[in-house]
Image (cartoon, rainbow, N blue to C red; front, side, top):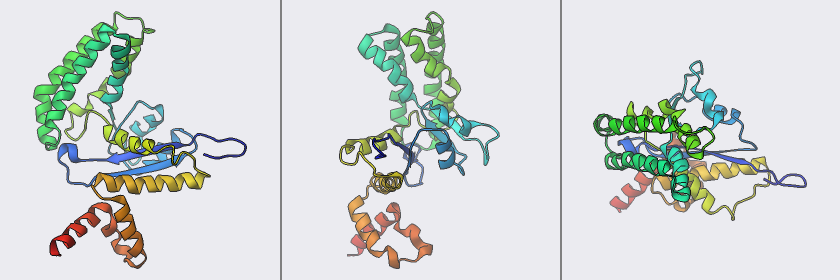
Length: 268
């Protein structure tokens, strides 16, 4: 972001709802926020009224969200296996570390099953996980703890294992709830879309500019998640929103708008 004499690095925060992996009926959506820094107060404000599941990395700024005394209730932490695997994959791919290679192979066996059951109802996913995935996860934990006990805490592979082992409860929470995915790749994919055009919109002239950019990211990303052309949707909505009843603004949301377009095409 532009500032006096120099630039400062602002932050993008993104939260994504995508119930498709467990056959949910709620439409997918994404929302972005802007801030000047990455302090923990920001997610606390973003999610002030939320008390569901949050799947994220191990950023310490989220810790207060998981506190039992939090109001309106604690958020349930679900760790991201992609982040855990990534640390081990680097060691397996670059350093060819045998322990890291085996860890990645074990994790990939779990991910392979998850791909097979993606899209099934939550109850069915939960049942299949108990039979097919839980034994692999238990075996991974036993093997990883045994291997970790023989390594110095300063070893790179030990640090990569500790990232998962110290958060094992959060990493295995998906086994107790069929709605939880193994990764937060849905949010990662949304962030990647913004990053691809970063050179075109790298700078925000002010805090207000950063907030407006976040609002536009939210609209465009949500439209794309619902297979809606953002340009067509925004052109139509902006052209008639002034005369649209305020009590029915939800009709202009991408998923409702898309259905209206399909109905209109069918009638025509």
